[in-house]
Amino acid sequence: MLRILVVLLACWISSATTALAQAPEGRPFDATTLELSFLRPVNEGNLDESWSLGPGPELNLETPFYWGRAQFGIHGADNEGVQASAPDYLSVFTYVGRGAEARVAGPVLALGGVRTGFLWMQFDDDGNQAGGSDESELGFEFLGRLRVPLASAVHVSGAARYRLVLTRPELKHVYLSLGLSVTLTNPDWLRRFFD
Image (cartoon, one colour):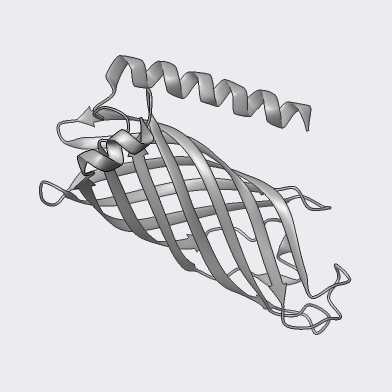
């Protein structure tokens, strides 16, 4: 657990330093970016004998936030049991995160970030391996994303992420995603509220 906290702290400091040097963002809370993505797992991690992870949507909100970007979001997916003893389950990962975005080539933006949240799992069968019909565990996600503008406030993005969930045994999953986002300028009263 200590190693995870050290890695998170190092990523946080690194992203803040990068953002100081190259931040394309405006002032804190100037705008809100709403992104809808479709995530697809590229590995089953240590679940491959019992479950098949399903693809699913993610809704992410971002805003410039003191040398970087604050993130809030939710990702859901239906997962199938591949053995009779493994019930199907719905997973929902809710998170808050911090990232730094920089221009890498012309209008292309790259973001690196760290997220923390909870993975909630609702099993279809009360006889699951966890001993109950639902479970919630702490999780962390490390994200790399490229965002390309389609219009002044509309972007398409591609991302890769590594998610670690602190179950026993730990869940370690890799996802790829494709998303579409729109950035809206926040009204003055909202900026003043957050300042």
